[in-house]
Every structure is written in structure tokens, then in C-alpha cells.
Length: 85
Figure 1 (cartoon, rainbow, N blue to C red):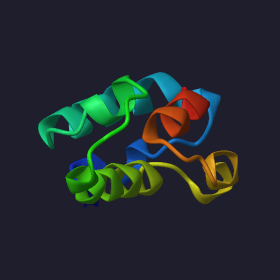
Figure 2 (spheres, helix red, strand yellow):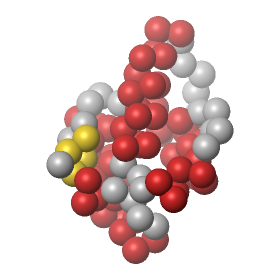
Figure 3 (cartoon, rainbow, N blue to C red):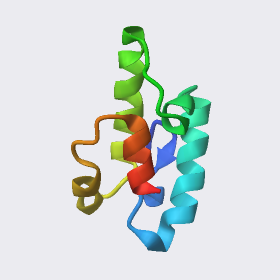
Figure 4 (cartoon, rainbow, N blue to C red):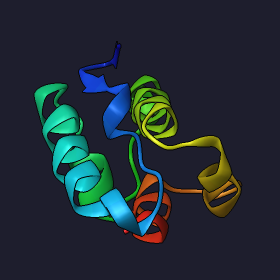
């Protein structure tokens, strides 16, 4: 099963599969033209809100439920990504 190109077996479980997860997540975000949203902590224009929601959804779909509490409430995608990495 795949979510936005990331197969469920690659969902982040913790440190045991982090390197594989990160490599797959970067490819999926890049293929969707969204890699810039995790690379820098730059304010985005309002018209990018749809992209922000998509990146957040891709990342949330790519982690197991027990990890979500670690990233809950992060204001920016950059902060969310940094917490995971």
C-alpha cells in the first residue's frame, strides 16, 4: 500500500528504520515538488498553504501512530522535520 508514493512498510517506526524512512521521504517530497518546505525555515506566502497541508499529510502518513505525539503542535514544517530527524 502506498500513500503519496511512500509504501506503508517504510513508515517510520523509530531509530531502527530511520535512515531508510528519511531517504524514502525525501524522494517522495521531491517527486511532489515539496522538498523546499522541509529544507529551510522560511516564511511561506499564503498561497502555499495547500502545499503546507500536503507536506504535513505526507509526513503524518509516513510515521507510525506512536511517533505522532513527538511532532504534534509543531508550527512549521521545518520544525516538524527537524524533530523527526
